[in-house]
Length: 135
Image 1 (cartoon, rainbow, N blue to C red):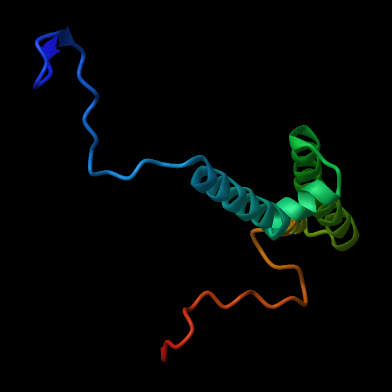
Image 2: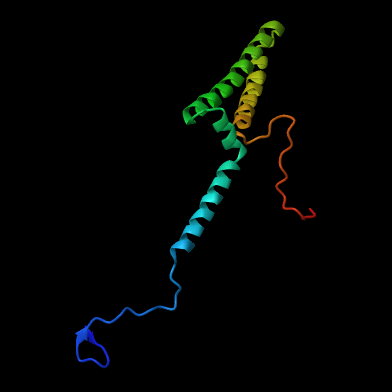
């Protein structure tokens, strides 16, 4: 407790004012609205992979089942075709080995396409170079 100048009484002093500007309610409200608008814009303009997963209505578990079944289907089709070629041409086990490997590669490619890592056939990949570069 301190004494004020000019009075002999002991009392609390007024808090000192800082040179920092105080935030006002209207300023905070303006900033909150601006942040809400930015969040809404980002939600609408989400990435293609997110849009594809949400529009299909698949959840994480559904997406996992879809990706694993696409991979297994590629491997199974390759193995089936390889076995058929071996029986027809009598080239056992080379047809099975070659077509099983091709089925594995096709399964991986299907999974990458479904996940949005690789462009679909007939689509151009976006140019990731910055505009104005002369490389």
